[in-house]
Image 1 (cartoon, one colour):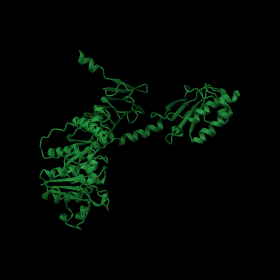
Image 2: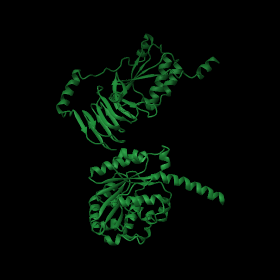
Image 3: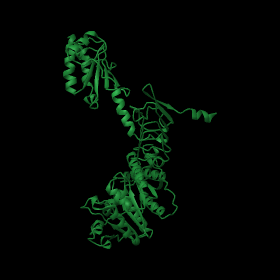
Image 4: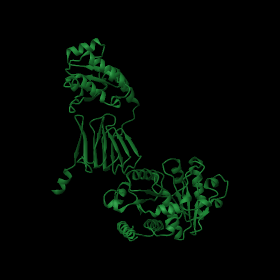
Length: 268
Length: 252
C-alpha cells in the first residue's frame, strides 16, 4: 500500500511543485513506483515541470467524473521507470472536486503505487483541504522569509488539527551567504518557530529555473546542489539516515566558481 | 510687510495640541500660546482620519484661558467642523468672554456626563445581563505553542505554556502569560479591565494591547526586546519591565 504525502506551504511560489516533481523523480530513481498527483485544479503546472504536458489527455477530474479510467489518465514518464503523473484539469476550478472524492481517488491509487505525492495549491481554502484530505503525511515547504514561515506555521496548525502525521519541513531556496551575513533567516530560526522535524534544506540554485524551463526534474541528472538536496530528502523519506548537506561549502564553492568564471571571461 | 511675515511664520513645532481619551471620545486642549491663525492652521493640518471616531462618540474642544473671537469660532465651524465632518460635543473655556460667546452662538458648554453602572437606569440592564451571563472561567491554560491563525478568547486569565507564534492571537478579559516567545498579538484586559498584566518569557512582539491602550515596541529601540518582561498599566500608562532578578539569583 502506498504512502500518501501532500506537499504544501500556504504561501505561493515557495517551490511546492518543484519539490513534488523532484522528490517524485528521486523516489522513482530509488526503484519505487511513484505517482505525482497535481491537485492544483485550474492552475496546473506539475505536468510542465515534469516535461509531460504534451502527453496529457485526461485528468483526475475526468477519473472522478468517470469520463475515463484511472489508467487512461495516468501519464508514464518514459525517462525514469516507475514514475507517473496524474494531471489536474486546467479548465475547471477547485470546486470541481470534494475531499471525499479525493480520498476515494487516493484509495484507488494506493494498491498500485509505493508513493503518492499530492501537489497542493497555495492557500488554505478548498484546494488545500481537498489535497490534504487524501494524505496521511505532509511535507511543508517554506523559504527563509518571514511571510513564508508565518504561512507555513498556519498550514502546520491546520494539518495538525486534521490529524496528519508526520508533518516534515523542507526549507527551500536557502542562500548560505545571506545567512552568514545575517540577511536571511537561518535554519535554526525557522525551526524555532515551526517546531517540526526538518527533512531537508534545498539551497538556492539557478539550475532549478533551467530544469523547470526544460521540463526535466533535476534529480534525473544530479549535477547541482539542489538536485542533491532533493535526492537526500527522498532517501530520508525512505527511512535512510542521511546527514544534512554542508551548505557553507556550497556557499564557498559558489564564490570560487564565480571567481573562476570571472577569470575565464578575462581569458576570452 | 510685518503682517505678511507673520502669516508666513510657521507655528512653533514644539507646541502641540494635547489630546486626551475620554468616555465620550476625545478632548482637545488648544494651546493659548498660538495665535488664532496658527491654531486654525494646526487644526486643519490634522488628517481627517484622525478626527474619525465611532458613531456615538465625539470631541470636546477646550480653549483654556484663550479669549476667542467670533472670527475664530466661525472659521473653526466652517473649515474644521463642517469641512471634516466632526461631531463636537462641547466648547469649553475658562475665559468668561469666550464662554459668553459660545453661549450666544448656541454651542454646548458642558461635557457629556459619564454614565456609570451605579446609575439606576443602567443597573437594571446590568442585572438582567448578568442573569444570562455564563460563569467566567478564571484561568485557561494552553499546554502547547499557538500557531499562526489560532485564536483564543477568554473572559478570564490565559497562560500559554509554549510560544505564541506570529499571526496567533489571544484576547483575555484578565491577564496573559506567554511562557515562551511572544511573537503574536495579545490583548489583556480586553473588556476594559486595567488591573491586568502581560508576562512574556521572551518579548518579541511589535504590538501589545492592554485594557484600552495600544502600545508599540520598536525592536531597534526597545531595550527589553527578546527579554523576559512584565507589562502593566500604571495610572493609565503602559509600563514594561525587564526580568533582572532571574539573573541576580543565578549569580548568587
